[in-house]
Length: 344
Picture (cartoon, rainbow, N blue to C red):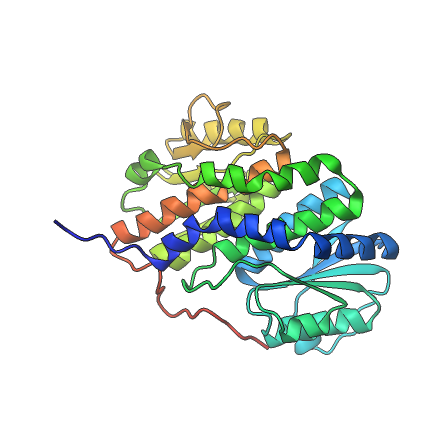
């Protein structure tokens, strides 16, 4: 009988429901304190500071903040502080810095510059104490636990859960707060889903598009990165509204497309574009029952449009880890990558 060795990546994917529950159980006071600080600051805008998967978490929070707090959110290039020495006018802002390790020099430098400029700065990190925590007014341990796989999974999810919990406290959004509290239960359902038909149709593809809109675009960006990291194929994330403005030129017969749709105001438009690409001969799979030509993938409905988008990442992680192994890769050890990348 053949022994199947479970990868670190799969173990960490399976830990996501527990990690989220641990965070929500232990960090309630930190959420409330950070939310109160943001209410006291009453920022005119918000900036985010992150790279890699953490930047995709920041993109998710951008949409969540804009939809909930109605404030504009912009991602700041960390090199503005670390390389260019620019002193941005951030005195009226809130700054959210995200880093699993909490020690990348450019992230720390930009967070420190934002704090010195007068921003209400919050660090979301899996490592306390850390230089990033020291650089910010407030620091929040995302409590994902040790993450050994190079490809981040549970730290990505817990960064978003922490950000959403702070957002619900900041804005007093009771519906969002309830939805966040329910996430561990929904994650436990989502991690059991399998996208077997997508695995079969993707086959030996060497390029893929991942589509989304709103918070689901952040999930698409994370998915495209994970395709590159763990399977060695070229993948690009696009807004479903943007893919027709040029990128569609590369979509030929049997070109694989993954369309990530949440139960929100954008679902219909994503389904419509997925069907249009399918009509061109592409192999399109979508997390929606509203498409007529694209093939449906199983998903979990959370009852809230923002958390519904976040739940999509779990079955994707399950899929991409298995697909990586099926293509002869080790998802724990992507080529040329290491767990902590320190850039300046």
